[in-house]
Amino acid sequence: MLKKSKLLSAAVVATAAFMASPSHADTMGTPKISAMSILNGLENPWDMAFAPNGDMFFTEKCKGLSVKTGSGVVNVLGMKGSKGYGTTNGDLFCSGQAGMMGVAVDPNFKKNRRVYVASTSDKYHGSGCKTNFEKCDGNIVMRLTLDKNNNVTDRTDIVKDIQYKPFESDHPFGGPGAHNGNRLRFGPEGYLWATTGDRHRGIVPQSPKLLGGNVLRIDTDGKAHPGNKPPRGFDKRMYTYGHRNVQGIDFRPNDGRAFTAEHGPWQNDEITALVNGGNGGWDPRPNVAGRGDCPDKYCGYMPNQKEGMLPAARAAFMPMSDERFDDLMPPAWNNNGLSQGTGSAAFLKGSNWGYWEGRMAVGIMGIGFGGTPSGMRIDVVDIAKDGQSIKSVIHMPTGLTKRFRGLRLGPDGALYAAVDEGEIYKISASK
Image 1: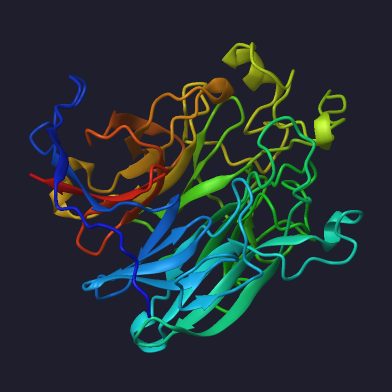
Image 2: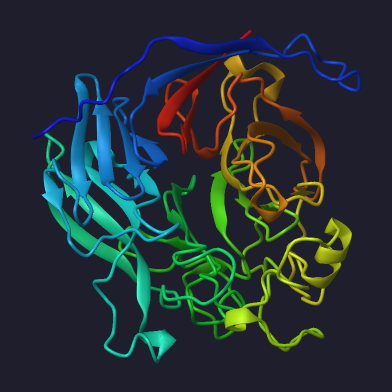
């Protein structure tokens, strides 16, 4: 098995102690934060997952799946055109925002050595893809079985029918491959949760059958959790629907409740407490709710599809959470009328996090209105017990100004962050 020549750095990038705002009386439990680069020279690292022995699996969007072990980095599964991987699958490809993205390790990994990966694939494209969108399959969820040397011995595609419109999009924003979701996490009950994006297709998020703009809850064979309660006539794999582009999902430690972090259009990135069968309220269809037609039949950037509108005007016309829907799940938080690429999330666990323990860390890539970079950071969000509001938001003092693409709490209690600049950081907390 070939190993990558990526450098491991032990240099501390930033160490900082945070003093809470005067509105917080409990400053004695505020942790000290340090950030250290543990992998660099990567190409768009996207997600991470940990084996019981601490080995870290990670994806690179246009290259593939690898694992960092105690002795180095091993390339596990490569995409079309990738070199140096033990296994390469030619149906896996990247385009724009799409590629190999989410990764999750089976709770019974010690026994079954299974890893789950979400990726773009052309394996299931129908011959009528360009004329009949329902025959287009793009994002899939794979179950991989590895031997003790991390070679792939079996690949089984457990979700094959996540719909998208063809990549040849005429929409002026987002570009080909936009809005995939593709974050994978195992919930506390042992089922796999998979997020999907709306793929810049207006009818998808509110569709009962198309697996886009959803949060799926499935078993390790891809079958629906028997407790899912989508509306009558909807695909049983849907836990929630009506989403735009969920790229952050995690489970609150004290009650196991699922929360998502989601990209907004020009406004209102959101954090939402999921309700079984609930509606995220995203509805970019043309010719509904007073809208006319829109470029590429997708009204996700209304009203005028370009810069210049004040946030309040944009939100009023094209809401992220449309109150027309009776089954709407109201967000606990929105990003002060901004869209900055809020797209990864991990709850903080362990006494090392002080009074931040139990709060949600949210990675923000800093895409401002109109694509202007701003606000690259990690926020620590204190969510109310009922999940309907927040108590506070604190900027984690990492000392880093990076596009935080993926967050994952490690078995050592540290927070691991993948950044678009090609690194993975270990962010440690101490009292």
